[in-house]
Image 1 (tube, one colour):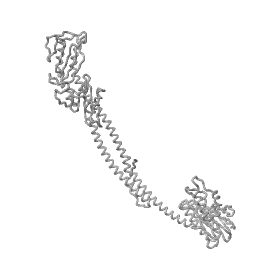
Image 2 (spheres, rainbow, N blue to C red; image 1 turned 180 degrees about the vertical axis):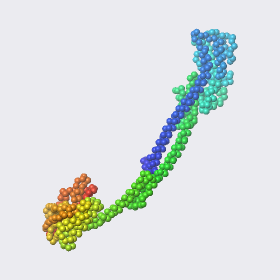
Image 3 (cartoon, helix red, strand yellow; image 1 turned 90 degrees about the horizontal axis):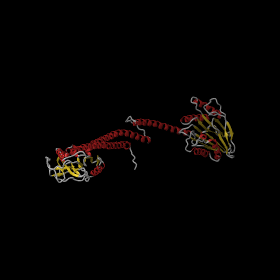
Image 4 (tube, one colour; image 1 turned 90 degrees about the vertical axis):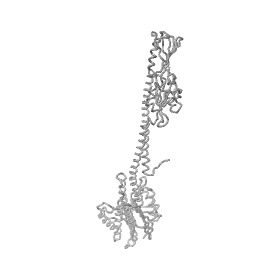
Length: 605
């Protein structure tokens, strides 16, 4: 399931705070594991070192009587007698840990020595060569003779022929031997064991058993999982540490094998005790992390509240703006990007308000301009006249008008003009041209005088700006039964013979209005015939309209349309041409205004 935060605060929490929190937790976990391993390694080194020192003391105490016994070793040239043996055993008895030394000669003439040293005399085996072979150490046991726990260091005397001629047993106090171990701080503060060669417990921490209890106590490795793992490690290594289950481990054990004696010292400590520094650090770290995260969340919430409040303010104002409601300027709460956004919104809102007012004025100008255009065509006896204008902007510079004289009966004028450019400026100039043409039309005079007057007056208004307008003026005179036209820089009109379908262009010399005030217009004339005719006057926007591939509509397509409008009314013909252009350009924006005027004559006047 995909999580999609619905607010900026949720997004910040999900994509900023949560990853940071996870990263910190992950780093703390790795740091904890790393430091934990270091502490365990240090504890292992420390405890193994202490075990090693304790083991050295045990082995040193055992080695001292062993060294004296080794003096009884002889070679082929050395002889050992009873007096020497008695002397060495007396020295061994002098050690604090030694309870007694027993020498046993199995020959018939010799008996076991007493617990007190011999005083000389008695049978003497004589001077002979002996060798002391193999030292064995027994398990601890309660010795009634000395009323104490003891163990024995036992060796055999071998003759030159490798026959057993006697043995010697050094009885050692078990408690005295381990006195320095059981009084050590690591033994008293932890759970510790002394194991024999078969991994049986010889003594353990807090041993309050009676002296007569049997030894060994139990087999090591049968109580819990840590003992099992420790025993497995004992069988493969001379020293080391073992971790118990749990994280941190509930217990940790360390062990060390004695070299001279088949014993092993094992100590077990609670994991929390060993890892107390890192556990304490982790506890305070988690507290500090929680407090830090809480403070971060608090300050981020305060900061985000200011940010989100600013954004919500802009959002609400945007909704109002979309509904056409313009409120007062927003207050910039912060001086960061949100404050900058608020200020930019205020600028945008102000500019949009101005533009909407301008658009409103332009729409009003468009309505005014549309109202200046003929609202309907002209239909009279023998005359069918219609026109249509298509602007590329709200307002345009194309001009179409139908003029009827109140004084000259039967005089009708058709005007199609194209002011340079398009938009509001062109619309204003178009209005000026319309006013000049209408006022000049009402005055008596020829078409040439009319156009000269318009050209001269327009030049006074456009001389500074360089603007101009092209114009095609067609005048139908019912009294003279003729058509006269003036082409002031405009494209020629088309005249179509409705009977034959042939067409020609209404050409003539002429200069655009507002360019040369001294230019004299020249009119052209065409008599009306009995054959119906169709006259098409259009602006250059119809030829320049382009489709999505940049291809212009062109005059050729206009030529191809002319035969199709012979039988159509003037209004139908104008609509047909406009529809063909719109179908050609499709969704492409027009770059110039388009005007079409169609005059259909059907009889002689």
